Image 1 (tube, protein in one colour):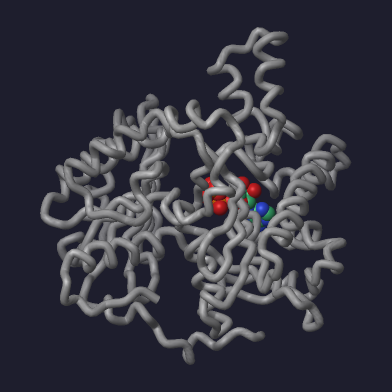
Image 2: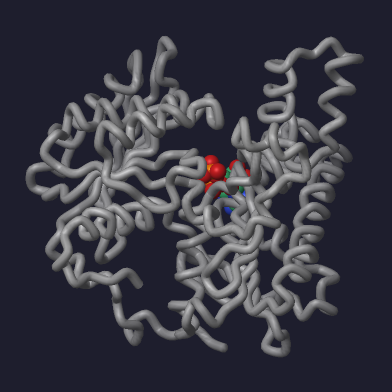
Length: 424
Ligand code: ADP
């Protein structure tokens, strides 16, 4: 299989041309990220981040037309953050009136079992996202606040909620069920939901598109390796397993999260280390992973430590790689045949060393990495496996904001029966 040149691929999104731009908002617990996206061409027209919301000094960055505007000022809450962002669009550009906003897309972390696709927001949707707060106590409240403020400030355009969990609502029951007491699980919504769904779905679609194949014909393992990290096994476009669970804590070793551990570690520490639920939550979500093992959660810094002879950093790297290999092996068994292993997100796209280490020794599974191809850097999807392998190993940059923007357009168009637009 080879990559089909961009110019020869039909653009399934060209029908979106008439729709202007989509403002994509990602409200975290103490941050707001935004991007004004052209859903047809795929480019970010402008983007920005507002960090340290609620602290005495917030940091604001707005990028447009090659210029970066930076400010430091107090941003008390998400309402103030969004007002600030909208003010920067007016002051620095592009003026939103000129950008012709077609919709506002909100990234929402947890959709529980209620949302398996993007939805146009109304009061009922907001109430349901709020009902899901027990499943995502840090994220969903920030998402609700972001949606409410944005609806107030931009009342004339449709708002669409795009859920991180939606893609994985298609998981089979045997993959999403935890083997615990059924009644307890049912009463409290305890099951695997999976996260980073927008990214996994985007990458699977992109792989098919660049190979000139149908999604239905490909079995893919996606490795989304950012600060948070997750793996998925996708058969013919439908997920059959994923590494994150009830929350984004399960699975791979991450920047600051442990990923898989024996749940009895929690009882052990509660009984013997005097840690309460909040201490344990902080330990496993913020003081674990690469940071817990080596004091550093950024893969580039970890590399520097390893080069300087730091043993903890070397062990952290080895644990990170070992976990990834185990998931590839497991998902190989689940899928039976693997056509593509796709690396994406900050580490997956940028660290040739991680990709080589993960694939090292997997030749018997038909998985290998060509040293020269792996060393190539760039923003385009590319194949990094040698010609002989049965499985293609690829680097596929994820574009979550673009995927959200396109899903927004589809959700709005779905409400209009005669739109005639189909998703690619
Ligand atoms: P998230 O969206 O989860 O915050 P990203 O997908 O942006 O994370 O990935 C962030 C991580 O990517 C950083 O923590 C860093 O470890 C890693 N990263 C970025 N650039 C490089 C690079 N050139 N080499 C290795 N790792 C990198």
